[in-house]
Image (cartoon, rainbow, N blue to C red; front, side, top):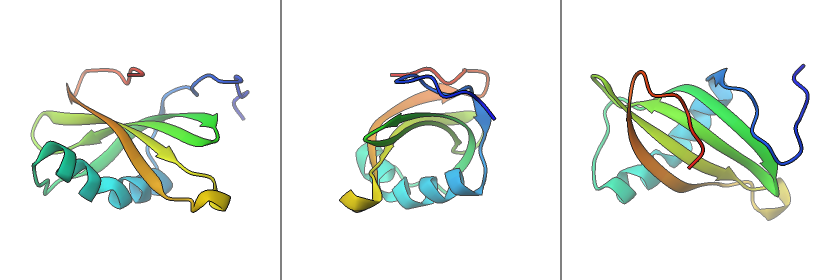
Length: 100
């Protein structure tokens, strides 16, 4: 198990079913922010940070060689547990996940 660094992000991990579920939940928010509709929206990698909830930086494949990096805040269950997109950036397949 990875040691948790207080306030810091985890190492980059391959996306799993839980991360894809978060992406599915926020897809409409991303499409609204970007004024685009995505046919492909597949989580590839992510980093997480424990805060009052969890911040996720997620690399999402959106077709061809195009990727988005999402910053998603997953609220604590006592605050509704919803996922909120707080940032979106364009990237390419070779770009590493960087906090923004």
